[in-house]
Length: 589
Image (cartoon, rainbow, N blue to C red; front, side):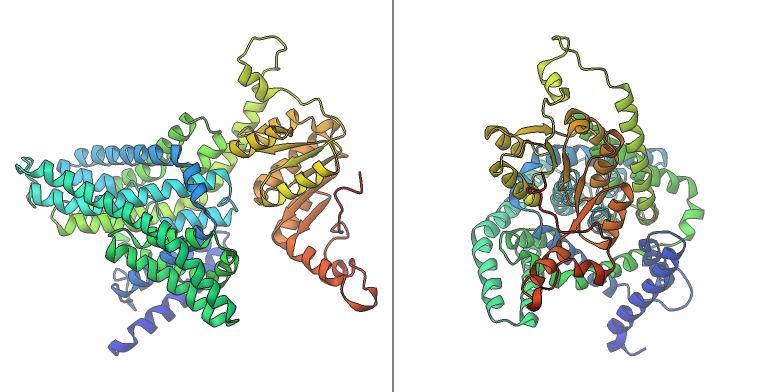
């Protein structure tokens, strides 16, 4: 094959095979992600037939990581990052420590050196950016509290890995490739200096983005948008995402992913953030597929047979060990079982940084190729198992919530329990009121309208800062993270006049719909949705009215058609349920 066609062959072969195997996986009710990984195994060097270029594939995959992190940054403000720092920073560091110790324990059982065990354990400690974000996006969890914690956790892990990649060569120079245990005389100073220098570079990059990037990036995108050229706007978005990522890596020594995330976060403050996200979506998904293909190419299926028990132990550390540690950490910070389980499931896999750390360890003579093979096999199988882990976690979370609700004691009227706990469980005195779940972009507009019309209402919200602001203006608030059943019970759902579910995540919204109807079968329920599948899901649970943004915009625009075309014509055209009428939340009380 001519050398100049290798890139084309890789892209065509990778995408075509990923499509075929993804379709087969979907047919057998597996995640398409499983098919993408199998496509990589087929084109990898360990299986017969066509072998894709192993140097080009990871570089293309890195573009997918950059675009993915840029997209996440668009919807993740600096305020969101600061909001979760108290749990993400200590939690991520503690979880890295737990996984590293577990890896060192397995290494000791296999007779490896302490240094080799340290590098091996460190490789098992960091989750894959692509897998974590794809899992959260597919389940509409990215904008939830647990989703924000998981992303913040990921950012801390990313910074820790950048620091590790700088320190590992220093460790090799101190110990030598033979793994000597006696440190060089200047070892401590060298390590301290390297840590300070790396942290200084990260701080310098963040400062650069907050001072310079915050002014230049939105201004540039705004100027390009004024040209009216969609092609130029797409190029500008790509130039910002890839350019800042490259600048971050080459100038400041931080990872491509971290640079792209901050670029997206800066642009996210602009009114053009939504348009930018829409423009890069197809490219992001295509390159993310190539990431999974490149991961599959690394797997030697024979290692599972040759090193079966060490492989099984490695996989157990990744899927159960470090994720259980994350669960305990999140619970220790006072969050619910549901949030802790979601975060631990998100972290129950490893990816790109594991490959980089393991490869660096082997190249410096600090870790054996056997250990690297176990890391690669553990990574791929943990990615394969991740959808099943999420499914199991959802069932376990529902079971635990049902058990906690059944065991919940009756709230006493005397001072038998602390005041803060009694306040959290006390049922509201409101009757014939509106229950508003979520006080974000949609919920806040509804809440303001209800206040102006003097309609009695109560808000269920999981953000303490939002809850404090609402209480300051006299709005009654129930603060999570209790189960939807417990919160609705405290909201006196049996006597409520209407329930508005304004949160964007269909799974959590469905729980509120289902639990509300168990207690008040006649309660009118209004929920929001982003697509037809979400509409169908919420309807199946009993929601009376599901408002989908695109449809409501179309109905509003139809008011300007000539000859008085009725707005309900749209429901007849798109075949939607007659229940999907235009609803005025105020005049029908």
